[in-house]
Structures are given as C-alpha cells and as structure tokens.
Length: 437
Ligand code: ADP
Image (cartoon, rainbow, N blue to C red):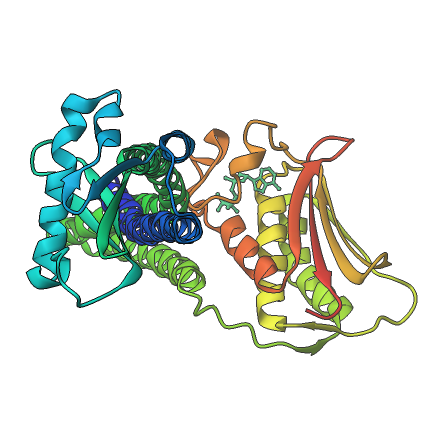
C-alpha cells in the first residue's frame, strides 16, 4: 500500500514540477527566439539604412565596395539597371546557387506590392527608397531578410537587392533548443529523484505509525485472548462442577475479568495518547505529598514481600509543580510496582525527589531498586508497547504496557523518563518534570 502511495506521490510531485518547468522553458525559449529574430532584423535594417545613405551620396557605385559589404556582413547583393541584371551579379563565387535568388526575392516583393509601383518607367516615385521584408527561397528552402533599394536618377532606375541569410541564426536557435532539451532532461531526472526521496521521507513516519498500530492490535488481541479463553473454559467447567469447585471457578473468572479490565484500561490510556486525546489537567501540585502518598500505599506491600522501601524528600519546602496529580501518581505507581515486582526478597527500593536548578528548573523523581536489573539489549525496548523482557513473561499481571503509559504521561508533561543501571545492582528510573510546562 505504502509502496503504491510512494510511487503515486512521486509521479504527482515530479510530474507537476516537470510540467511547470517545461511550460516556463517553452515560454523563455519563444521569447528569446523572437528577440533574436527581432534583433537580427533591426541590425539588418540599420545596415540597409547605412548602405542607402552611402548610395545616396555617391553617384557611381564600385564593385569593390559592394564586395566588401557582402564579405563583412555575409549578405548577397544583386543590382539591376533599368530592370537588366548588372554584371556584378555574375561575380558571386556561388553563382549557381545564388542566381535564382534575385528573381525569387523580386517575385515576393511584387506579391507584396502593386506591380505598377515597381515599373521602372513609372513616375510614381523618385529619389531613393527602400523596403525590408522576409522571404523563403522556394528552390532551396533557405530563409532571408531582404531589402530592395530603388534609386531613380536622371530617369534611370537602379535596384539593389540585399539578402541576409538566416541560416546562422537558425542554427544558433536549433543549438539553443537542443541545449534546453538537454537541461530539461537532466532537470526531469533530478526532479523525479528528489520527489522519490522527499515523498519517501514524508511517508516514512506514516508507515512506521501504521506498522506500530498493526503490532499493537496484534499484541492486544493476543493478550486479551488468554484471559478470555480461561473465562470461557472455567464457565464450561462450571456446568458440570460440584458446588465447591464452582466457587473456585467463579473466583478464577473474577480474577481473569479483573485482569481484562486492567488491560483494557491500559490500552484505552495508550489509544487516547496516540489520538492526542490524552487529557492532562495541570494544576500546582506538591510533588513531595504525591511521593509520600505513593510511598505509604506501597510500604505494606513491600513489607509483605520482605523488600525495604525508603523515601527521600528535600528538606526545604518545595515550590509547587505544574502537573496533573492523577497522571503523575499513575507514573509513581507504575515505577513502584515494577520495582517491587522485579526486586526479590531482601532487596531494597528507594524513592527520591529532588528540585534541581540548571538552565531551567525541574523536579527529578528517582526510583532505584536492587532487583534483577535490565540488560543493555533490553533497555531501548522497555518503553515500547507490550514489550516484556523474557524473564518477566511468566508473570501474569504484567502486560508490558506500564512503562509505555509512564512514557506517554511524562512526555505529555514535556518531561523525560530514562533508565540506567544501579551501581550496586538493579535499575534506576529517573523522571524529570519541568517546573512549568
Ligand atoms: P510490565 O507490565 O511487564 O512490567 P512495563 O512496561 O512496566 O511492563 O515494563 C517493561 C519491561 O521492563 C518489563 O517486562 C521488565 O522486563 C522491564 N522492567 C521494568 N521495570 C523494571 C525494573 N524495575 N527492574 C527490572 N526490569 C524492569
């Protein structure tokens, strides 16, 4: 499911950015090509204006001057005298390929203007006159900017046709397009690679969350099945059991029912924390009183098991901690319950409370025991839901949810919970709660 979503998001992300990039590239290319053509046409018009001014000034035109202009600008110049092609036209080195250009350019010119205006005998105009236009040679397919300069002197009409080939402009436009195509191709590859990477990063927490939920549901169903099957089996036995046996079975059913109830409560607490419906009702609380209450609640149990429980509170009166007293009492109960469960007879447990001032002021609750301890391999997992170390699996009242609930409560208060080894053996759990969250 996530692989498909990853692929889909990549296509969506990469596709949309690629489409935007291609549209922008095409827009830029069209603007740039238009300005290239416009610049070339303007520069040709300027050249023609300069040539026209020179022709206007001089009475005779030398072939060397025309050849120099052609060589300098890469133009073709044709001259007609009263409609007769001038001898100069035959001097072009590529006369075979250029001979038709004169007639073709004049044909286009004629189609643009009325025929009588070009009549050399006509009197419609006098002096010097030029006009620029674009034409494509039907025989070669080459494109040109063309200019026709008419000069009428002493009733004789000279025509200069100047052709500027657009082949070099076209080839630079083709190479510009190829360059853009190459850049766009590279950009598309990079964009898709980035989209794959980023959508992967985006989906990873969702995927992890989904997997955790599946694990949670599987573990919860597994844990619920055991007491349920005991209840069903005991109920079955009740049908045929004697009065005395029945009392025993109903006690088992009650005990397993309580276990289920406890487990469901824990699961609901965690489910609410996962849905951000974990309510923390904060108010100023005397943490030392909370610790004292927890100590008093566990003292008889510890005595019963033969474990020594001590309490260490600060001597000076404490400022109040802004926290949810019920939730913090739940954390204390989880830590004390675990310490008692995993500390054998003759062991010691110590609950301490400190008020510390570093960069920020915080309360530190320390639960130390001299019990079985937690191996380094187990430490990273003990706050996971339904995690139970191998040696505690046999105990029926442990579901592996206590510490994950404590973790949710402490982090819900913007605090921290951690565990490390007790130097004299056993474990030390430390809870840090900021004075103000
Ligand atoms: P459980 O209900 O099994 O105690 P917890 O989430 O409270 O579940 O604890 C997870 C695991 O961490 C336990 O199964 C146990 O292996 C280990 N653990 C917790 N507290 C202690 C402790 N004080 N000493 C040794 N092991 C502990």
